[in-house]
Image (tube, rainbow, N blue to C red; front, side, top):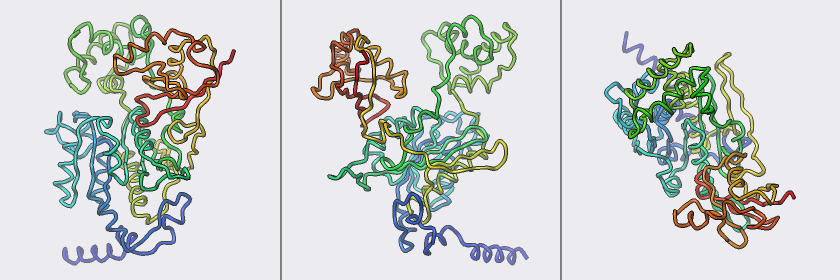
Length: 441
């Protein structure tokens, strides 16, 4: 009877078909028939294309574990995974590639080792470290990048790096061979999103930066003098008490002992001010800026991301154009829409941005405005576009020291109205931003 049941199950599977069925027969919904066509589907070599493609997975956490599993089940064997983090005991409830014995080990190393052992056809290569440690040639060696990053700044860096790889022909059109698609996934509680970015063709992550508010911070005076919320007490313990107690030791947010100390001190301060709600999990969330994670949401979004990767690599179906949102808090609901390109996006367009500013403003005030404004730069360096004169350079130290006197000079003494400045910043590797300065006075 058991054998008969197994045979029936096998027969049923054959009737239903598998991914191979979609890859080996013509389809009326092939890539070229969609609203974002990037290739023509050829059923005769779609399977071999998937088996030979190199895919990069950024992040081996909640999304990354699911993405690696889905890639293995989809027959995409050549995968690299990059992650800086080590495994914490709090990861074990949803990041299913890790076990208790793995706590403290590299997420990328353990995830790659687990997948390779469980799925012998897989060839997952681990890279433990920052994505910024890899050069442009590393990213150019892949046919698709799936991002499971959990912070905005890293996603901005990856987006700018990959967009910077695109080369143009004599007519100014992007060279398709230099375009590396990015599939960006993200989750927060019961909500999530999957997005397809075709560099220099569709909108990029920078185009939608306005949808991501700057990271919340707490005024120091509130933290130190008048705490009103549990988060204030936690921030006080981690930013003020820790340096006083351990002046020669940096707080290790991955250390259970360090985080327990912060939690206990925050709880003491909360009790002093009659503030309820300080928990160990909240302490981790505030100190590490953790976004709440739900395993089922991770599974849904990662499946959507890998589904898009299969379509992009094989052209077997129509691509997502370009954004899918999943809302699971009020029911199982999702919708898609086209996220339009931003005309003056410093990454996806070559447009020169324009800024009206008083000629009496100092160069230092301009730099601060570049940090606090829409561009959200970190450490901008500035040269005059036409003459190439360096107004201020962050590195190396000798050049920073030589250009430092310009910081206090008014802009009217350094440039003329209408001149174009070239801005470089760590946020935009391989890309410079053109900024036309027009004096308002």
